[in-house]
Amino acid sequence: MDVISVIRTKRDRGELSDEQIDWVIDAYTRAEVADEQMSALAMAILLNGMNRREIARWTAAMIASGERMDFSALSRPTADKHSTGGVGDKITLPLAPLVAACGAAVPQLSGRGLGHTGGTLDKLESIPGWRALLSNAEMLEVLDTTGAVICAAGDGLAPADKKLYALRDVTGTVEAIPLIASSIMSKKIAEGTGSLVLDVKAGSGAFMKTVEDARELASTMVGLGTDHGVKTVALLTDMSTPLGLTAGNALEVRESVEVLAGGGPADVVELTLALAREMLDAAGLTDADPAKALADGSAMDVWRRMIAAQGGDPDAPLPTSREQHVVTADATGVLTRLDAYGIGVAAWRLGAGRARKEDPVQAAAGVELHAKPGDEVTAGQPLLTLHTDTPERFAYALEAVAGSYDIAAPGTEYSASPVVLE
Ligand code: URA
Image (spheres, helix red, strand yellow):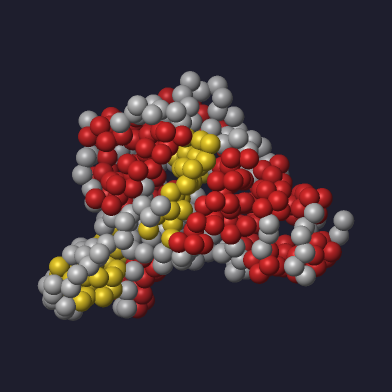
């Protein structure tokens, strides 16, 4: 087999055979196929697509490139969720302990943020002492003793995807449904969860800008999970405006703890409960009551044990930013738009995110929202607070904020998009 013929097949809109797919994934993992050759193939896939058979085979080949985890010895059913990523999307933080408090085991392998979307591991690392890197044995131990674990995927899990995702990130080939679906599902299937709930986001702050594209991504991923024996369901959710009132690392941990304490913004609570119900149903725990587990403190108890089991101090004060800048409303009226992408870029530029994989992030950087779409605002009132340790970043972040919101005349009718679209 030679790689040029594989690239030419896809470049000329042909179908890749099973043998071509198995060979190219294996040869790329072993570095026999070079990065520049794989990026040409990824671009051909982005431009010309793949059919369902090709996507299924590509996913199976990525799973076969590494180890598979096995949670069958656990006494509880396993349930996991994956979000396709958004701005202010801290849902994993309250959700994992909540679902564990209701009787499931939640093995939550998570990622770091890149670009304008945040990463769960970056958020949790703002808790003093908390460790994202666990061995497989440590991960199982935390899962078994607390019911939930949130950690980085080990190097042995779908190594083909690790290489390919890093390459796509720097070659403009992330936004391809076959590549996104196979990337996410290869890791989730190799992880060994019994059931999986996908939170597929649509809107300006998401990979998928339209509901139609989000629907296609969701149905592709549900098909892949189901074919591999993982009970998989998907919700389509709105990402046109940030979730909750914060985008940033420590800022989002603080808001998640408010949710676990029975408070927090209504949209974060609504989505956390909607995803918890889907996960519990998929795990066969249909009698569980996640709203009760939030209200009676049992989800908070699991959170505290889970953070402590990974070296974190749940009582330690979270870092706060050295500098703040308040953006005020320039008119009186109704806030009719607060754009997720613009706020995500501002948080990233303030230091909450990274431009390259190896960049550090600032724990305290980010954006706090003082109003959400539909709220009445008065000229001069605080709309946003920008947080950073490096104030030279304010000007750059303010460029992203400008044009990211609209204030319409007082009394303008506003109809909010639902949090869960489908
Ligand atoms: N998340 C992933 O793990 N892979 C993608 O391709 C996109 C988002």
